[in-house]
Amino acid sequence: MPPNSNLNDVLERYKRGEISIDDAAEEIDGLRLERIGDFACIDLGRAVRCGMPEVMLAEGKTPDQLAEIAVRHAESAGRCVITRISGEQSSRVQELAVNKGLTVEHRKEGRALIVSKGGRPHPTGGIIAIITAGTSDIHVAEEAKVIAEEMGCTVRTAYDVGAAGIHRLFPALKPMLDAHTFIVCAGREGTLPAVVAGLVDKPVIGVPVSTGYGYMGQGRAALASMLQSCSVIAVVNIDAGFTAGAFAARIANMRGKP
Image (cartoon, rainbow, N blue to C red; front, top):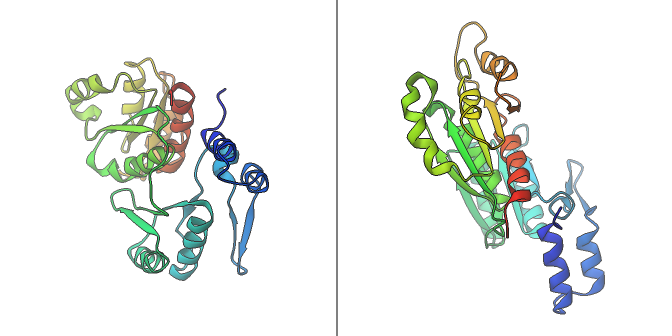
């Protein structure tokens, strides 16, 4: 397995004399923690240790708590990604971040906010295709896209190409066939991931989405259908765009070339 690109960056900076050996060791150890008041303990070593960014779930946090955590993390680690963020939370985070001289990118469709010192994630060469069955599934797909891009991948998308109009799928797949991993999001009966897995020779990750109603609605029928797929797929939890994006990126980054 190739070494973590973040670890390579640290070693290169030490080699060029840009940081001291003590600073390099602190970044490499991957176990740096920082407490914020009595409500948070942030992980500053995840990128080095795991090759993926620290991602915060906004749900359940007050706007002030979220803003302080996000800004402190971005100041210390360079970047912070927030998922499932509300309008009120977003406004507070952006206000504090801008006052601290940080850059904020709001990805509204993915309900995500990225707070950083600027710059972009280092490209890895990994390519991910993200497909949705319907327009209602796009918010979950966009969450996956944010995470995959933060992990250095190129992401290609095709939305609203589900089994109810299966002829839409084939032209959408054609420009995606060189992707290293496919993420397929579907609600209702959740058929599409199994169909895609029967057409491509790459790993497929099924994401059941909480669209649909009535008996086995809210993603339950889609989850059951994907788990029972006769095509070979992996399945994440209902609406788990973050998990799908991160797992797909790990696979793609093993196959991609920097």
